[in-house]
Length: 90
Image 1 (cartoon, rainbow, N blue to C red):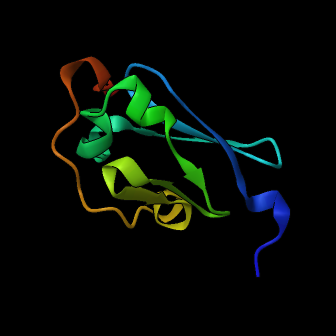
Image 2: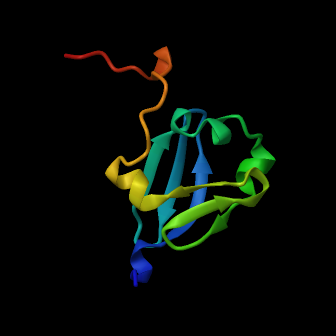
């Protein structure tokens, strides 16, 4: 069983990221292009989510995000990042 401190408490979005706020104060973000179904969703669809401890589910989209997979990089390799998100190597 997972402790309460590791549970998701809120989901928010920027133009390019989905960010999951955790009960313990951490915020975990990932580019939306990793989740094409969420990237294509409108604001109302994005805000209609359910929190399930270590996962977030969008019933209307029939999709979800597993936080363990998000943190450990288990999601499959996405399409290349948009030009606006590419970092220049120094």
